[in-house]
Image 1 (tube, helix red, strand yellow):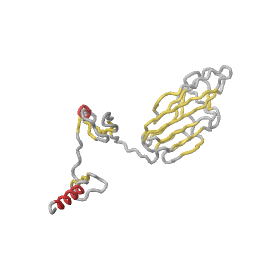
Image 2 (image 1 turned 30 degrees about the vertical axis):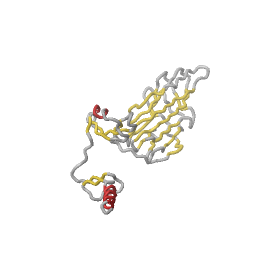
Image 3 (image 1 turned 135 degrees about the vertical axis):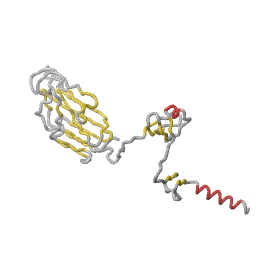
Image 4 (image 1 turned 90 degrees about the horizontal axis):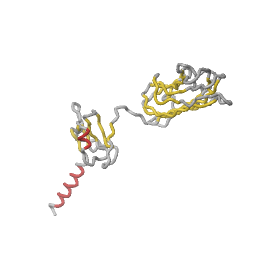
Length: 246
């Protein structure tokens, strides 16, 4: 009995002591299973090629390696049976602004939007809401919006347009522009035949784009059919919506 009791106590305290590991520290943080301290050295993760990584048998969900083929930290985001290796992003992503949005609509109904050279769609006339004026900064003179936080955003744009003269077969088209460069697809559904009173139509865009803090977004619109003036149809009939989703 004298031998058994110390043995039980030793096992208990050994288990407790091994519940956390501290390297170069005798007081590992209570939230960490492993706490490493150093002011002159780092930590090296296992360095594998893609082929070596893929040869790992049943890699655990959350397993981390450094892929030397692409110089990336990667971790398994799926199951052991069907691993999916995701790169650890080098770009910090804030979650504080997720779901925050802003919506604007037009008050301009006189600007000709059917020009040879693209102009910014005059949609930033009336603010319907803005959840975060620090995140979204609108220039309603130049018709642009500046995004002040890196992330992924969903954009919805609806433009109701109308022919302003008797010229037939006009067809403006529009697209999203970031810092003056086109991003995503054209909206090319704005054909106006001008027969039997067909003088109105709509253009629509729905895109998800990745932007950096400070990027400037505009909706560019230009002529793709015949010349002749085209205007936004009525006040409030054209709108712009953006929401941070990641």
